[in-house]
Length: 319
Ligand SMILES: Cc1cc2nc3c(=O)[nH]c(=O)nc-3n(C[C@H](O)[C@H](O)[C@H](O)COP(=O)(O)OP(=O)(O)OC[C@H]3O[C@@H](n4cnc5c(N)ncnc54)[C@H](O)[C@@H]3O)c2cc1C
Image 1 (cartoon, rainbow, N blue to C red):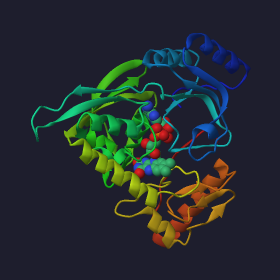
Image 2: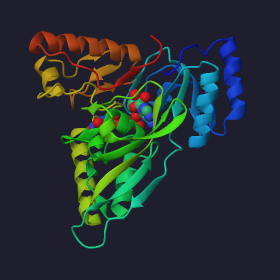
Image 3: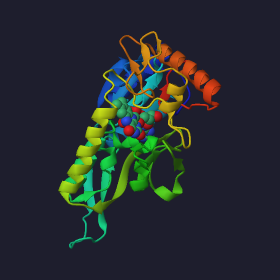
């Protein structure tokens, strides 16, 4: 959350109603977060806001700041565990800020350089890869099957097969304390599954430097990625993908298996039988079930392997 204060009481209710007068986008009050997360857990957010465009987002942020209402930005909730009491303040989804454009075409002639594409935060990862393919550009096929938006992928440095999206990113446009600013990626601190942003910073857009590629070659990259995911990640129940980060040089799923925890269940939350770093919702799981299961797994892995697992999923909401 990027500001102090509580928005759920009477005074908060009035504050939220004032926002309704200023915003063109969609405002959903007391919105159950289980509808917006792939783990299908989470109590209500006081406000779930979907601004129409970047200008609308700026007005919304100003309203929230003026009224000292906390907020957080989200993409499509594929990496979020929202606690059962929900989220006090506003959750801002950038899903309508989703334009993708070519900003420099690949030079004519084979094997020459590449091109640059700008994608706004709400664009889906697969839409970005497909757009690049249409322009004869590639090299980010590895994000095809990662569910979610460009903004979420940038914040998480999402990736696969040893590559992360920030390795293909040239610069970012951030909305930082109401001001729009561009940053070269080398000015920012990032690593495996994280990008350091200040609490009041939102990713608005990113520019990617891509390679010249035959569209058929990119299609092959997409097909391979989606196929591999179908075989390895099709766990059959709602999940957030890998629940824990892989510790340096090790695979979290192996450590969980070594601790004998594959298939272990707490309430409706289970260590997937198919992929033991995926925690799945077998039906009616609460966030508390997932948190308890996560705690048990961390203790089991620590005692067997001496390794402390760290969550990759972002745990948010009122404790
Ligand atoms: C089946 C499955 C498979 C998966 N496989 C992979 C994989 O192979 N590799 C991988 O890396 N991940 C994987 N994931 C996890 C998930 O898809 C990624 O983390 C994805 O990038 C999340 O995107 P999102 O738009 O849903 O972000 P959200 O889950 O909505 O948000 C994630 C984080 O980013 C922040 N955020 C979102 N948008 C913005 C913004 N515009 N500005 C600032 N902060 C923002 C949120 O506050 C939150 O902290 C998988 C998930 C599932 C369900």
